[in-house]
Length: 395
Image 1: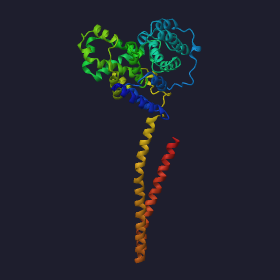
Image 2: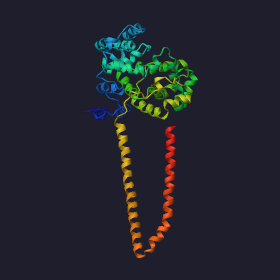
Image 3: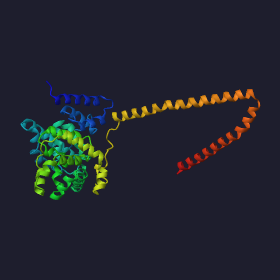
Image 4: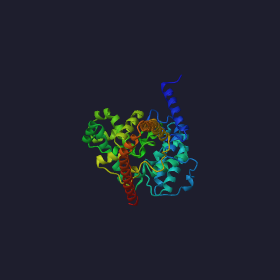
């Protein structure tokens, strides 16, 4: 017998496979799946979808091992990798021992190829999630792209831009939950408690790989500043526990910097995406008066490598075509009435001319001046319009 969850997951898998089987693959449909319950469900689907979201050409990934050289952070990478992966490989030392050399290679390869990037502690934890869900080659390619774009501000010579990102959290809370905001401000705690959430996309603070992968489903699909909004979503969802604490720096900082309790990330992600839609990053920056650098990659989203020819666009075109098709019968009716009216008028004119020969003379003397003025005005209007167009073209 299948559980209700297993049945729902099976339905979700069918929906995801339908999007994957479209030509071209429906990227926007997949992004919607990342918001909905279960995300991409399992490692098999994630291994295929995560590279798609980053537009990785899986047939042309370089041999990253050949690019590794000694760099400014080689020693620190070695130390961090040595003490990593314990939480996500509990009870599986063989997997951990096999993956550590791979983790070392992909991190060192990215830093060797891009010497302008500065390693930060926690960077290897991002790589760990990518590696444990996919494989070494894909993890390298995804880590490289994320480093250049999503995490670029974290890999500058200093953390000035990261501090700006952290300082956007409290203003966003004030727009969502004034009681939580007032409590946090009274405690005088600083947003530094969320630094590992931002730097590692929560992977440092979660005990289970599945939970981290669920978070990555969404953050790989969303705006690169979505981790700020997800941080606020976590804070708001823990509001009851927060408000029961002593309103002090120490208690609140300790509460948030410890490993997070079990959270309903499906629910939090839906709330996060709704908040991101309601208060986009540009509005958040202008409202808080905290502006990232204009050249920040976080402000350059969507990126030029992102895929836009997807099922959503096709469906949108179909809707537009449907609207055009609905207008066509109205045009046909208009043409019919014009033709029918013209024929009727002509028939009436011929009938009157036969009945009374003088009718033609009277009508001609009456209509000729009107028609002359009408066409003369139309001719002058066209000349004026044509002249304006010519001037604008030259300007």
